[in-house]
Length: 74
Picture 1 (tube, rainbow, N blue to C red):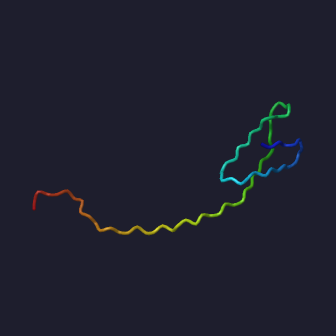
Picture 2 (picture 1 turned 60 degrees about the horizontal axis):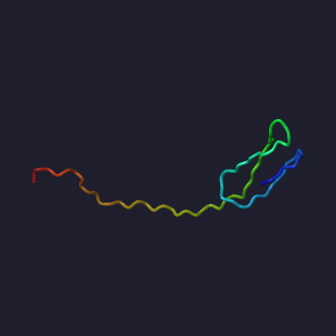
Picture 3 (picture 1 turned 120 degrees about the vertical axis):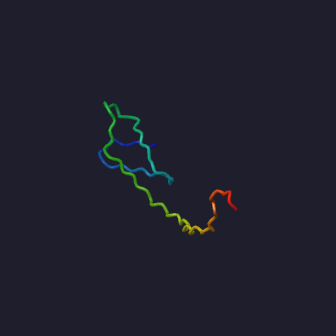
């Protein structure tokens, strides 16, 4: 929880490291005004490390199998 000061300037807040893609901002007070307002929100994060995924191996070809139905003729 953070409290914004009544100042017309950028204010910053440090958050603990998280693995997330979304941030929720909830305005709980308008300091007695008719409505609540935020001018601008900026969120920065350190870039995540790229996971080193294994390169997929090619599919091995299997011998073809006759799947046609049996016939009455020998």
